[in-house]
Amino acid sequence: MDFKPTLMYAQRTHKFTIKNTSLINLHFNFKITNPETGMLDAGAYSIFPKKGSIAPGCDDNFLVKFAPMEIEADFTRTISANFQHLDPEQRPLEINVLGVAERPVIHFELPPSAYRERKEKDMTPVDSKYKIIEFESLGTSIRNTRRFMAVNPTGQGYEFEWEEVPEEARKNKPLFKCLTQRGVILSGKKAEMVFEYTPDNVGEHESHWIFRIPAENIVQHFLVVGRVNEPNVLFETGKIKFGPLLLQGKNREVVSLIN
Image 1 (cartoon, rainbow, N blue to C red):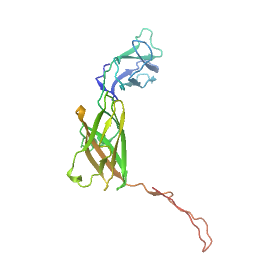
Image 2: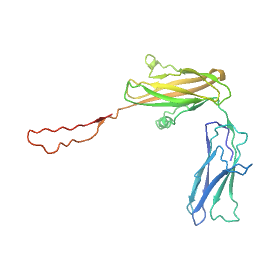
Image 3: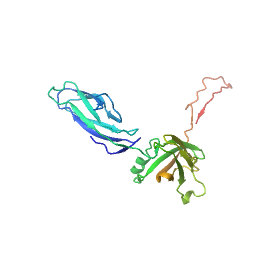
Image 4: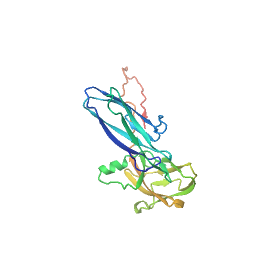
C-alpha cells in the first residue's frame, strides 16, 4: 500500500475491505510494527477500526491513514491482522505500507469548516485554491474575532503579509479586518493570526484575502466568510403562576430574560 507524497500536517487515506466467509463471528485485532526492528511502532500511520468483529457472511471496511508530522528517512511499516480461530494453514494478513512526507513552507492550523460543502449543495462551488476562515455573529454591529496559528516548519524564518482583494461593494466600509497584516515567523515557531468581523446587516458576507511570503515566493488565497444569526433571546419560563390570592391582595414573581 503506497501513499502519494504527503505534506506534513496533512493526511491521506486508503480503504480496503475484509469479508467473513465463515459461519461464526470473525474477531480481529490490528497492530502496526516497524519491519526493521519488529517492535510496535505505528509512526505516522493509524487504522480504523483497530479491533472488533465481523458477522458471518458480512464484510467490513477499514481505513488506513497516513498523517506525517515530521520528515523521516523511512516510513515503511507493516500492518498485521490477528484473527481468532484462523485456519493454521491460512496465511496471516500482512500489509506493507509506504509513504513519503514533504515539508511545507507554511501550515495554517484552521478549524474545520463546512462552508465549502454547503456551497456545493447550493450549486455555487468554492475554488479549491481557497482556504476558508469562517465567522458566526449573533446580531449586527458586534465585533467578532477569529484567531488561528500559522506554523513555520522550515529551517529559517521569514516575513509574511496579508492583503485584502478590494471589492467595489465594500470599498467604504469593510466588514472584515486583519489585525496581523505583517509579521515574522521564526524557524520552527508559530505566529498567531487575528481577523475581525463586524457586520452591519443580516445575511452572509464574503471577503477574499491573499497571504504572501515574499522571500519564498509563496501565495495562499483565503476566503473569509461571515454569517449573521438572529440573537437567541427568550424568557426563562413560558408561564407565570401567582397561586391563590385574597381579594385585593398582591403577589410578585420575577421572570428572567436569557440572552
